[in-house]
Amino acid sequence: MKIFADTANLKDLKELISWGIVDGCTTNPSIVAKEKGVDFKTRMKEIIDLVDGPVSIEVTTNDLHEMITESKKYAAWGDNVNVKIPMGITGLKAVNILNKNDIKTNVTACMSTKQAVLAAKAGATFVSLFWARMEDMGYNSELIVGETAEIFERHNIKSEIILGSFRQVSHINRAMLSGAHILTIPTPILKKLPWNPRTKSTIDEFLKSWEEFNKN
Image 1 (cartoon, helix red, strand yellow):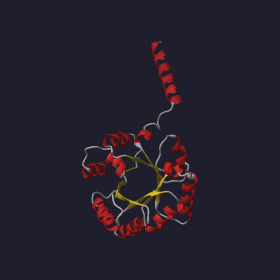
Image 2 (cartoon, helix red, strand yellow):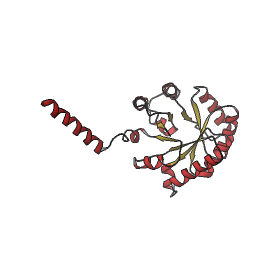
Image 3 (cartoon, one colour):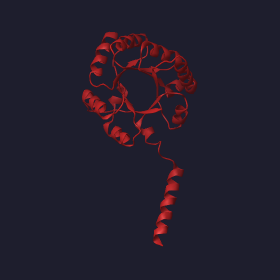
């Protein structure tokens, strides 16, 4: 299983990479919009150069021709770029065209197994399922991801499943067991994962014992 950082913040990304856990990075227009005052192209290229793995950059249009034009522009920024394309009929058409042009894609905002399978059939490199947003609609996220993973394995589908849209730490354990190939996790949640109160108290106990030992 791989972990991607779901961020466009360079400082956060550098910190997370220093932990040795980051296999890639995902962005979207909402994430980029949080980075006030930055030049979009400059920031994306900084991330592309920094990350040793796939970097997702999302198109900002629902028009097919504009999707293709935008995707080609982003793909030219780096070999590790995969272009995020919104799920839908137009998105599937775009992925089909881009796949034939050897442009890697990440079909985003999939909320069902059916959508994920169609995206993979169209030629998506990655398909992104949204954990919390599926649960918002009353869907069983674990069931959807598990079924998708089973279908991909059974039919030897090469697309990788990215699971995102996490809002709390408790989602992560369940997501790790779901069958997704990749979890893309926001910085605030990633920074909470190493911490456990019992771990801290145990380490403090060891250090206190060592201090007492050195007093003798």
